[in-house]
Amino acid sequence: MFLYDLSEEEKELYIDLAIAVMEANGDVDDSETELLKRCCHTMQVKYRTKAVIADYVEVLKKLKDISDESTLKKITIEIITLMYADNDLANEENEMLDKIQNIFDFSSHTMGELIFATKHMMLSLSLIQGLTLKA
Image (cartoon, rainbow, N blue to C red; front, side, top):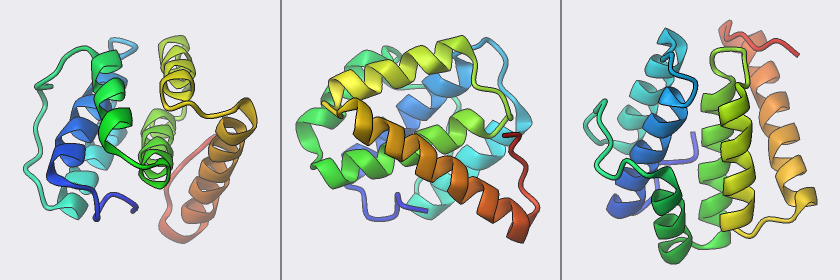
């Protein structure tokens, strides 16, 4: 939804981050795959399943270096959406959220707002499009 205006480098880094999120708990769910495919379509880039940069911390640092705060928030919302796509926030994904907060230099309040807003956006979309999210 929010990724269409990223730079080409930001788009590629987003895909690397998304792949790391999808693989974090060792089980890539079909709903995660479908969501990444939709994101790639929105960004008008080719879908891929292998990260160019496998270390997601390095990806986060690169995104922090090249992106403004608004873009980092958009990326975070999309990543949170991906994390909840399978209706389960794995411990590994929760740890990734902590890294995102620290590296992107978000306050606890800002991160909490991003998570809250994303979950509510997903619930609203589920009413319209039949997506699922367990509270």
